[in-house]
Amino acid sequence: MPAHGNVILTGFMGTGKTTVGRLLAERFDYEFVDTDRVIEQRHGPIPEIFRDHGEGEFRRLERDVADELSERDRLVISTGGRLMVDAVNAARLGATGDVFCLTASVDTILARVIADDSPVERPLLDGTDVLQRITLLLEERAPAYAGFEHVDTEGRKPTEIANEIVDRIVSRHA
Image (cartoon, rainbow, N blue to C red):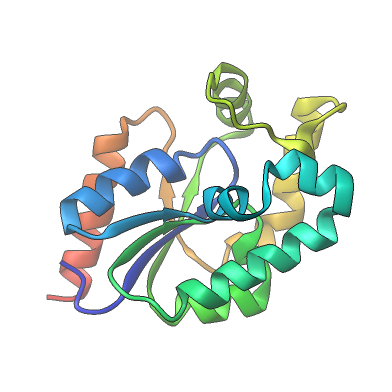
């Protein structure tokens, strides 16, 4: 069990943050929080927020959620793919616990996003060449993601990924 605080998962869409986060929450007996779901519960569907109020308003809502969660403990937090790219969000949430960036190849992310049968809509991929857009967004976010401890999800089961994160946390706080 972590010696302090929270476990924060960041990374691009389709890397397994929600699935792995739920497993970690169960293992640590922590509450699981998905920042995108919090925003949707309070303000409606993310695509509507983007359409009606713009990406800037959505990013403001993310900052509000990050501020709120930074005051809480014993959480596993699955962040939206860009939330931790914001240096203020990263500093606030990062100070509350262990941060892991889940990674996968562009091809794997594309396959997972296409195969995802959940009702989640991804407004940053709407109306575009999805492969090209994923590649561009990953390149833009690479410098920020580089600042976090990486966990490769390529070709791995969620339980394997969760076990690796648990092992890292336990060894770090032993």
